Amino acid sequence: MKGLPHVLGIVLAGGEGKRLWPLTADRAKPAVPFGGNYRLIDFVLSNLVNAGFVRLCVLTQYKSHSLDRHISTTWRLSSVLGQYITPVPAQQRLGPRWYTGSADAIYQSLNLVHDENPDYIVVFGADHVYRMDPAQMVARHIESGAGVTVAGIRVPRAEAKAFGCIDSDTSGRITGFLEKPAEPPHVPDDPEVTFASMGNYVFSTDVLLDALRADAANPDSDHDMGGDIIPMLVERGEAAVYDFDDNDVPGATERDRGYWRDVGTLDAYYEAHMDLVSVHPVFNLYNQAWPIRTATPPLPPAKFVNGGTAEDSIVGLGSIISGATVHQSVVSADVVVDSGARVEGSVLMPGVRIGKGAVVRHAILDKNVVVADGGKIGIDPEVDRGRYTVSAGGVVILGKNARAA
View (spheres, rainbow, N blue to C red):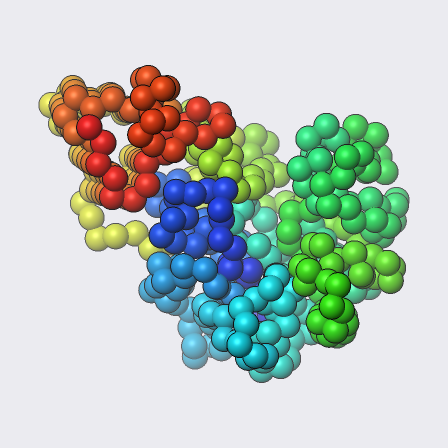
């Protein structure tokens, strides 16, 4: 777009998502449905496209069919204007091996960089829920003259041990990059807060290419962006931090400004859904000034019949709540909740069927799950653990196409 620097976006979407099993038993983590309408990949792609970055490569690897299909059918841009979002599978360009890490994924795909010849490369992860204007981060990167800029989100020091942590000086230069440290560093202006890496990076192209080549030649490297490339550039004095608090997204409310969730575990995935359904949501899907984009199926509007109700909930297209009660839940498209059933604090993905008189509480039901008449999920923890997956936080999860008595 006119006025923007020449930027290539690379979205890392090859993770297995083991901690989200069984939701990732049959799909890549970025393809996991979220929020009734979306897939996780839609959040990063929306942020990049809304910011005007429309030359994007999505690097995939594991169980990528549904992800590839979603990108190909949903994210169609204008080839006349030179715009594209393309899924790029592992191609074994450097020999008969798969990607050994996120840095190796880019190294094995350098033909994409050479074809586009950008001035800057934006490397973002594919499985976080948030709004961000990446153009502001790119502008800060250019202004700073850094080789790489790492997006950092402020988290309490007590919680920072689970993240890659950034140690920086008052100028914004990164002086240390530590993976899940026992004693996280603090930000220069607050001893109780740490910069956690969001897994989003902006590189000057020549700096990234040089770092990738050096990393590929190092037999002791794990070839990981956060574990190897960023520490290398920190040591060279070429890394800067971008404070996510400085990012101003159009239409953001005071309540959801700065929202970012790593939904890498079942409990985090569940809690992020619960953030959506309050009257004043912690994360607002209804911000039309910075929309989360996707394609919706050709279904009729949701229908509530025979006294069916849904409160503090999201209900997707084509769903029918018939003589049933839904409370504080996310109901996706084409879901049927039959008479006398009650759904509480749950996430129902497309195609779910809840039988008459069934009770579903504190649960995640993947696509096309069927709960029989009178079935009970989330009522007896011992029974649930014997039949289904139960998270550390007590959420009951049924995988795709499961049948529950």
